[in-house]
Amino acid sequence: MKKIIAALILVLVCSNASAKKIRFAVDMGTHTISTAGVHLMGDFQAYLGLPGGNWMPNTLRLGQVGTSTVYDTILDLPAFNKYEFRFLSGDFSYEAEFVPNVSRVEPFAFNDNRWIYLDSLVNDTTFVGAIPFAGTAPVGKSLLRFM
Image 1 (tube, helix red, strand yellow):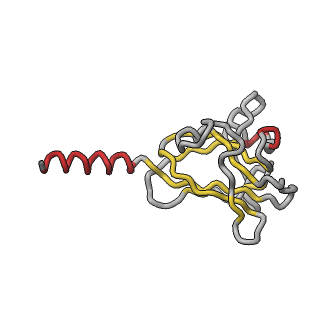
Image 2: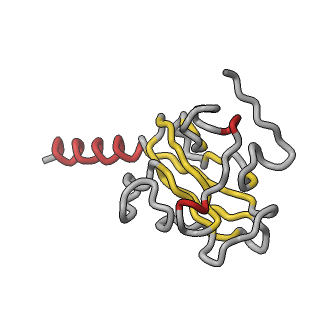
């Protein structure tokens, strides 16, 4: 009986060890916010169990941070994976931001999504910063990409 309990505890610990919190945030200060709200869509929505699977524009609404123009959400996703995503001002896919070339998965190609790679299992929350809607880097920072 002790071996079964030990095995169950090991399975639970290992399954939770692959999860990592990530904070997605967008600064809507330069854009008009849709009455439908600010949303996030990406290739992780099916993992989260959201209806419709991945790239559904109306299932993951971001909440406003206080009275600021920043909208965010914190998700629990498996570490050591690359995730693609886009912010929307509204709840239709045609209301998605235009992602600048340098911020795209494949610049100057047909994959114009943003991306992030979760690289550790540390208990803190990964946070890049509040990226301006259709911008490249958080205010006061610069995006540097080696190609």
